[in-house]
Every structure is written in structure tokens, then in C-alpha cells.
Length: 562
Image 1 (cartoon, rainbow, N blue to C red):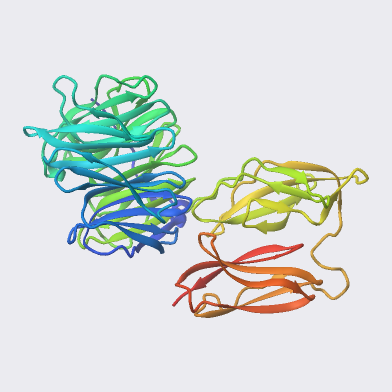
Image 2: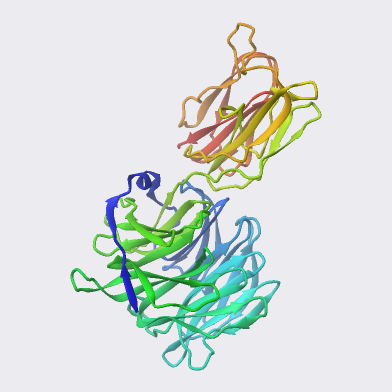
């Protein structure tokens, strides 16, 4: 087995560190035994099991770490797993002696229903993993100690009912457990570990994989991936048309000290080929705390822990090269025994379980939003250009910035929280001669701004005014002043200015975009006006107030601290 040790960058990447947000303790209880995380545009979906009462509980947490809702899924369960897509969420867990239960939500955790249980053996259970994709359904793997001291790995797929049941290790004398699972366009990929120690940290085994071909519903022959019996456990993921395997090698030899230590390692292969013999070792003396995700830019991102000082490191795989650097997110020397990470666009979300007190911490890496896509325009009945674009929602999206230009220079002409905007200052008609270019940018809660969308050009235009001012000498303009106080408890004042008699709507929203209160909805005379937000009936958190007139839209963030 060829071993390639990576250069470890011990210096702190300042730009990266500035985008990691410090860990916060989640309000999910104490005595947590297991955690799992799946993130989408609605937030972070978390499932936990409690080692005292053995219940399974679900939490939806926003990007700032605030709990938006929770639900007791079952009063008993072990080995929880969570997966889903933009609106479907699945939670699975071992229940009783020989059952695997799954709950499904089609509205991002608001309501839950059960799907048929899986019956398995009552022998020792060594883990449950699940992934979901709309056209393939729910894909599940687990293992039980069914052959004397050895584990067997099993697969099931829920797609319009349970189908494709398979003992993955039924080929000749194959055995193995603690499986991992990933999928590509036409295959489902499963790994398993040949070790048989029921004490997870002490497990040692070789790593094998087996693929299921969806198109012809057939199983390929198992492959040897890492043939030395020194791997503790593994992760699988697909990115850039490659299958990537990560394994914790318990007997990596440090070339500098000669010590035998543990190290996370990485292998990759084409989706339709076999494994080679080359591994890249990411970090000497790793702990078992590790997870991997793939972001929208098709980079692999891993988080892992150094066993010397418990520092958390991030690895980024791009252009077939690994870069490993400390994220500098540790606030204390703490050992974490479980990581779970997920991503939405290029943002990374992570939860970790504290080894000493079994609480759960949350932290995230905030990247720029993705650029809005497919900007188009049409002409309204009033001859104004109306723009629309794909509403690709991110968990921390805070609106869109609309820019108008003439040549290479663009000016901001408005903001909106929706994927539509009308430029009331411009009319379009055959008698007009001007031409304007438009583009849109996305903005998140931390005021990071995306690259611009595609540019659309509107011809035969005329602009009615150069600014929001009325030009009548009274120096009034459309303006939303900063709320005061902000943060507030329990009231804050919203002050705004309009240069002419106009329709005004001011609405308060929560962080999910749900309308909470209409503060103003009617005609207002020109001048400066005030309205109060009363937060007596609201919980602490982030809110947004949006003012909209016939000529002006603006959104402002409010923070309620009780």
C-alpha cells in the first residue's frame, strides 16, 4: 500500500478563520449519546439520542444556532440518522431488539409520519447510515453481528415502498459491518469494515466496497479498497465523478518520530473502476471525530480533530490536492467524540458532541452566497421592466441587491427579499432611445455579497428620475433609518421618510421569512414617520422588518434579546 503523507499547514489561515463562527452550545439537552445533522435552506435539522432516557428527538436550528422548533420523535431509540432534500426529511433509528424505524416529514420537520419498519436480527447492532435523493428514494445500510463473531451488512431502499433488500456481504465468504453509503447517477456505493470488535474504538479491519447498479438492478462483485486490517471506521462520498473513501488508519507510522499512531486517510477512484493502492494521509494522530461534505463548488471539505491538543482542522480537496489547515475555532481544549457536518451552497454547518459532558456544540463557516441564476425580464402593463431570477434559497439568505448600469459602471437601485423586482424609475417604449444593463446579487445575514448574476440588457428605455428624491427642494427622499434601540427589549422604533404621498407597507418577518406582524399598510403623506415594534409576544432572536412603497423597498435586521 503506497502511503503519501501530506504537508500540514500549522499556520492559521486568517481569511478562513474570519469566516468560521465560534461554537455555541445548542439547547438540545444533556447526556447526549449520538448526533446526526442534515442542512438545507430551512436550516439545520438535527437528531439526537439521549443516553439517560433513550429517547429520539428532532431539532430545527437556524444558522445562528437558535432552536426554531423541536419534536419528540420516539420515546426509545438508538443509533439515530437523518437525511433529506430541500423539503423531505427522514429520521431513522434502531428500535427495540430487532426493528429499524423511520419517520418522514414533507414540510421540513413541521409534521411527521411513519413509514413501514424494517425487521432485522436481534444480534449486536453496529450502526445505521442513510442518504436520500428524490429519484432514488431513501437508501439505508446497517450491520448486525450475525455470523459468529463477524458482522454482516444489509441494504434497503425506500422508493414507493421498501425495495432492493440485500445482504451486501453475501458474496462467497464476505463479512463486514459499520457500513457507509453514497450514491452517484446510476449507482449506490456501500463500504464495510471486516473488523468484528463490538467496542467501536478498538475495532480494526480491512475496508471493502460493493456497488449496486440502479439501471439494471444488479450488484457488482465486492472490491478490496484498503486491504490492511488497521482501519477503525470509514466515510464515503461522491464528488467530481469520483468515489471518495476516508478511513481512520490505526497503525500509521509517523516518519519523523517512528511512532505508530492513528491518521485519517483518503482514497479515490472513478465511479466505474476499481480501487488503486495509493492513499493520502491527512493528519497524523487523528481522533475518531471526523466528517466530510461536498460544497456547491464541488470541493470536498472535511473536519477532523488532532489528538495531541484537540485542535479542529479543516481539509479542502481541490484540483486533486489536499490543503489542511487549522480552523482556529476552538475556544477550549475539549475532546469531541462525534462530528457531523453538512453544507448548503458553500456554507458548512457542523455539530460536535463533547466527550466529557455529552453536550452538543454548533459552529459554521459562512461563505459568500451563490450568484443568482437565470436573470430574465419582461415588460409590465405600465411599461416598466420587471426582473425575475431563480429563487435558490440558502439557509442564511438575507435578500437580493439589484443594480442598473450603462456600460461597465453599475449602481444599486433597490433591494428585495423575493426573486422579483420592478424598476419603476424606467419606462420602456419604441419612442425611447436609452439602453440599460441589469444584474442581481445575493446577500446573506452576515452581509456577505455574492458575485453578480448574468447581465440582461433592456433597450428603448427612459429614466424618469436620477434618485429617489422628489427634486422639489425639500430634501426628502425614500429612506429607512436604523431602528433604535437595536438590539431591543421589548420595543424598538422604526423611522422612515417618503418624499411624496405614497402607499406604505411595513411588515415584520422571522428569520424563516414568515410574516409575523403588519405594522403599516396604507397611504402616508410625505414626510418622516415612526412606528413601534412590540416584541412582548416574541422570543429572543433575529427578525426582519421590510418597508415597501410604490417606489422603494428596503429590509432591516432586528435583534430581540430578552
